[in-house]
Length: 144
Image (cartoon, rainbow, N blue to C red; front, side):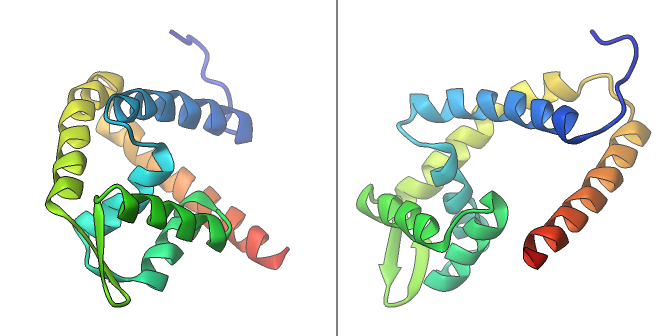
């Protein structure tokens, strides 16, 4: 356990992200899915069905991915039968919802252990700081 908290910077954020992502990827791999597929599946389950371009836009925004890569991931999920298309509308299938629910159920207790003992106030501060950093980084990326 770290006794002296490092100042937040891109490295600290990246290390936390990749540690948490590795946990999710381990769960996803047991079900034959990738992190990118989970990022595309979630909005289709939670908010879907969505227009194909809107879903691709969500993937691009979440992963800072190229639109072609986002469409490729959507294609993978369509091919696996986890998403279904009705014209330009894309929605989760029963299998897609089941995968999402299973991964959510399997990661929930792990997440609870990861966040256990961190005061709500600390999590709120971290959330505000990370939201501001994300906003600024998105603005820099848009300006490039």
